[in-house]
Length: 461
Picture 1: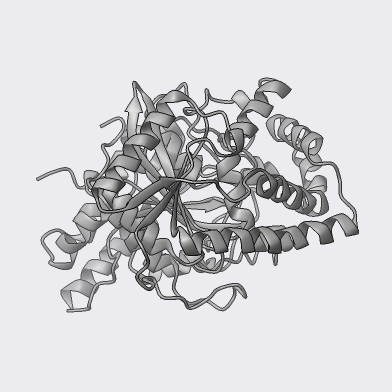
Picture 2: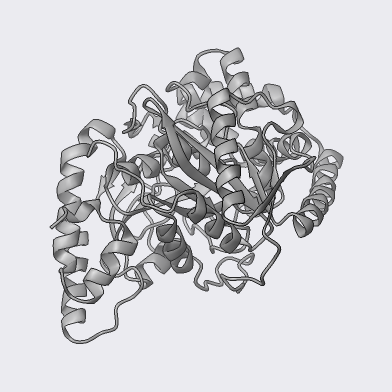
C-alpha cells in the first residue's frame, strides 16, 4: 500500500470511514514523516504526538462502535501558531508570547476538531505574522521543501512547507495580505483565502481586533488538491457566534455565467515571463473547459493595495508598536520601518477617508464581478523570492512589495482568492490566482479543479 502520509484528505477519508485502515495507522504514518523531514524544514514548531495518537485511538474506538465519521475523521492537519489552541501558546512567532497559553480553541480549531481532523502540530510564522517570509527569534527559520534557497512564503510559511512535504494533508493558514496564497504559491501547493465572514475567527488570548483586522484577516486552508480545499473549507466554516462577522452562507451559490476576466499585468504591474506563460496556459485550459475568457480592464488594484496597507499599518501602530519594541526582532523592525515609509501615519479624518474608500472600491469590484464572476491574475509578479530578500535592503523590500500588488489588494474588499499551483520552472514553483465575489468560493474551486485536476506531487518525497 502507498505510504499513508502521501495520500490527500480526499483519498484517505473514505478508507478510514470504510475501516480499511485505522486512524492510528494514518496518524502514525504522518508522525513518522514529521520525524523524517521536519528537522530540515522547521515547519512544525510545536509538536503534539501524544495528543494526536490519543485522539486517533479514541476515533478508532468510536468507529468500531458504529459512530458515523466526520468529513475529516482521521485526517492530519496543522495549525498556525497565531491562533488559539487549548493547551498551547499562541506565540505568533514572538518570544514575548512564548508563555501566552490558550485555554480554549479558536473557532477554526474547534471546527476542524468537530469534523474529526486530528492536529499533529503547530506551524511557524514570522514575528507578528508580518512578512511573506518565515523566520523569527523564537522558533527560527522555516525552509522551502521545493528549494531551500527560496522563501517558503509567509506568513503561513510553516503551513505551506508542511503540506508540500507531507506533514499533514491540510494546513491551516491566515491571510490579511496574501499570507495563505503566497506560501501556497512559493511551496507549490494550493491555498484558499475565504471571504470575510465565511470562516469564524476569534482569539481569546488577544481579544477583539481593531477594524483593519476585523475587515481583512481570515483563516483558510492550504492543500495539495482542490477537493481537499473544498473539504476543509466546509469544516472550517461551521457556525461559531464568537465571530460577529460570521455569516451562515451556503457553500454553493447560484449558477452564474462561466466568464473569466483575464488580467495578465494589471495597472502596469511588472510580471515575469514564466508567470505570464502560466497565466496564458491557465486561460487556455479554462477556455477549453467551456469558460469565456477575455482580457478586460480591471477595477482598481493599486488604490485598493494602498488603502489596505494604510489600514493595516494604522492597526499595527495602535496595537503593535509597544510589542514591536519589546520583541526587538531585527527582521520585524526592518519590515516595520519600510512599511512606515510607504504608509505615513494617518489621523482620524484620514482613517474615515480610508473606510469611505473601502465602500467605493468594494462597490466597484462587486459590480465588476457581477458581470465577470471570475478573475484570473498573477499571485505575484515574480517567481518565489530568494529567502529573506525583503530585509536585504530598502530597494529589495520595495521590489517585493510591488510584486505582491494583486495579493494585497483583494483583502481590502473582503473578497476570496485562490492560489493554484500549475507548474514549475526548474525548482521554482509557478501558479496563478483566481478571484471571485464574496461567498463565491465554489466558483474558485470549480475553476481551480479545471486548472489542477490531479493532486500535486510531494516535495522531498
